[in-house]
Amino acid sequence: MQLHQLTIHEAHDLLKNKIISSVELTQAVIDRIHQVDAKVKAFVTITEEAALQQAEQADEQIASGKINSLTGVPVLIKDNMCTKGVLTTCSSKMLHNFKPPYNATVVSKLKDCGMVMVGKANMDEFAMGSSTENSAVHVTHNPWDTERVPGGSSGGSAAAVAADECIYALGSDTGGSIRQPAGFCSVIGLKPTYGRVSRYGLVAFASSLDQIGPLTKDVTDCALVMNAIAGYDPSDSTSVANPVPDYTKSLVPELKGLRIGVPKEYFVKGMQPEVEKTVRTAINKIEELGAKVDWDVSLPTTPYALAVYYIIAPSEASANLSRYDGVKYGYSYEGPGSMWDVMEKTRQFGFGPEVKRRIMLGTYALSSGYYDAYYLKAQRVRTLIRHEFDKAFEKYDALLTPTSPTVPFKIGEKTDSPLQMYLSDVCTLPVNIAGLPGISIPAGFAGNLPVGMQIISRPFNEEIIFKIAYTYEQVTGWQKQKPDI
Ligand code: GLN
Image 1 (cartoon, rainbow, N blue to C red):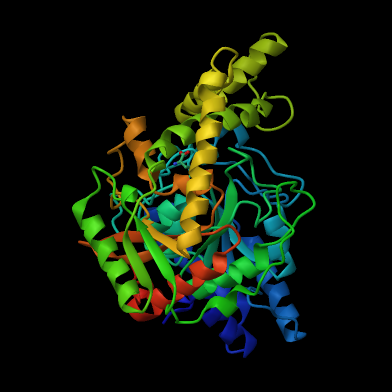
Image 2: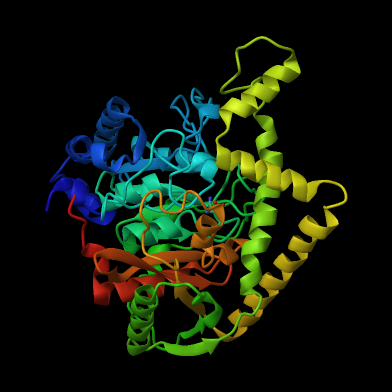
């Protein structure tokens, strides 16, 4: 095995026993980036020099006996998380020159662990999209088939983990942006419970839905990253002060006694039959392994989630994105005109078409006269969806669904139809609406294309998710399959 292929826990064992150094590992990852990123295009910024300096520091730290699971292990960060002094563009022209004066809390936490950051990951502009085709920089290609999308919006993070261009990555998930690309690239992607991980320093898209989470090569790594990034943060008023368990304690292969529900509404009309078949086979396996599976669960409010999401998310986005006016930071139109002209032109030229579409949808839904009919109603249905999940979790410890109704689609296939693109997230966005934790794990392949399975559980019960994911992974080993890139 080559160094860039290591998982976090494998790399950690070698670092701890001084068999390799962080500088060697980091150099191997950088070489890999140079070897394949021209094809994958997962990065918007490569921080080669800084990474090697951080690796040297990590090696000193290790030599002095101070090492934890993440020390000296190369990470890639999605480009919507603030990194002090390093470009944070959200893959938007609007922030093309923005170097934040501070670190996001997750970045500070990784720094405290001895972080080695190899770069910033491409994404759909401001995290709006499901394919990275909305990036103003370039499209990321799926390492399993470079004519296809890696999913989005954390497509750069997922593709880089799949192609071994980093050992692990961070993404953000507002409606599926960690899980859907994880499914498309056959890696692990967890959206934690809302409030579990601080959003401080995450460029806001829809604040009541956004959450940061790990993208990793296996479930053990996912638990290790969660141990490092979860927890209360006084700088994020929505973060929750529940104690953070040691998630690695949940990595036990034992499903006996677990009650699992399979909600039929997630096998939506138009789902590709081979995706449905692969996911049902995966659930069968979980039943064989000892869990008690109820195959006939109904969550009847599910079909409304898409509409609710596409009112609430754009509404919040329209408010959050009003701060880009060309005055405080980022792109500023330089032509002649009044202050108002400059603001208008800055927004006209700084934002891409999808971002403008969301701002218009959101502004409309919030405007007087329409507010009650759209925004308020969507909030009410949101409460119904949440209650329905609460009730389901009185009976079941977890719910299993497909991550996405299709395998990765061809680049360009859905760009003419925003609605088709929005449908990529039908299975993931109810989880954000209800603030629940959800993971996507590799469940097999349809042809040579990855299929993901989603595991959802109660708020602050990531442990059950880890238990199921770990057990399944140990038996099937799908996570070990690598794209030939
Ligand atoms: N694809 C969804 C959207 O475009 C979700 C994006 C996300 O989770 N950031 O809004």
